[in-house]
Image (cartoon, rainbow, N blue to C red; front, side, top):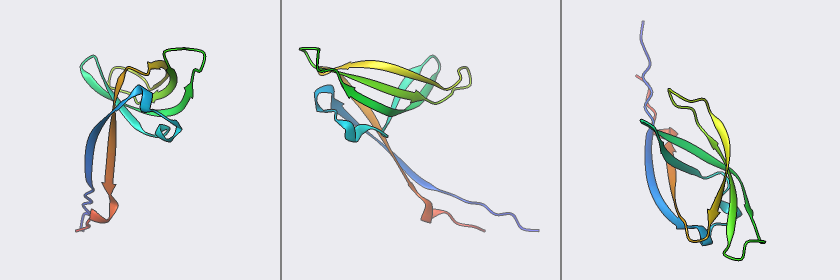
Length: 100
């Protein structure tokens, strides 16, 4: 009897973006936050500019993943243009998987 072992090569790169530089192309991108004792990964599912705010403001809808102490949730956040956001780019190379 043989067992198969699969490995995925992945890389995580953080990049920062000013709130004023956000645009709809950021929908689907991942963000992270520290929540209690855990780091929590979230995904931007909607990004709407609030043109009524003279200082510039985005409303971001983020779907947060669960942690050992919290269920997953959806949160709407206001992101002023002057805010800096850290995005996480996650690259997975499925071809790096090997079976033995």
